[in-house]
Length: 210
Image (cartoon, rainbow, N blue to C red; front, side):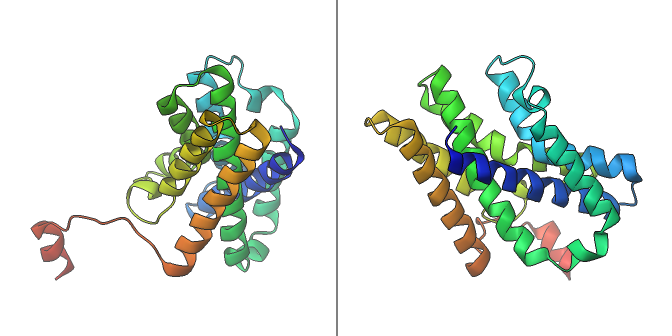
């Protein structure tokens, strides 16, 4: 993995762990719950992707710097919660960087095993958003990526860009970097312009709103 992806991966792990830990604290969980939710948010997507690709045991469980970073970030959030609540905007942008890094690294790993476009896009996307889905499910909520915001869509597009570049002969490092930049740019733009995918409003929802 190139140095840019390595650095941004760590940014993503920290940002995702903090978001999971903050959700746990708001749900009234204890220290163990905070660490578990932070850990799964940061590393859950990569673990699922590794299992899909037949990589056993998953890299996120065997390469110790990754779980140690997630656990440390989660514990720090528990201790310094008031500090993190005042840094919501920076954390959102750090999360976007992580989204780009995770989707690119997931797509890269998948492509190294198979050149199947569906597999590459799925693994890249799941690596990026899988942890957030686990976080929301453990918090007894409908996953955010299914209800609002242009989030998973950015990861899907970024993973697809990686595959297309590799397909036309661009090397791994350049393809991953381009994929990451596009995903991050899309997510930054979505945050600024408040992009959302269209929804179908039912009569029941209208009546409930009234």
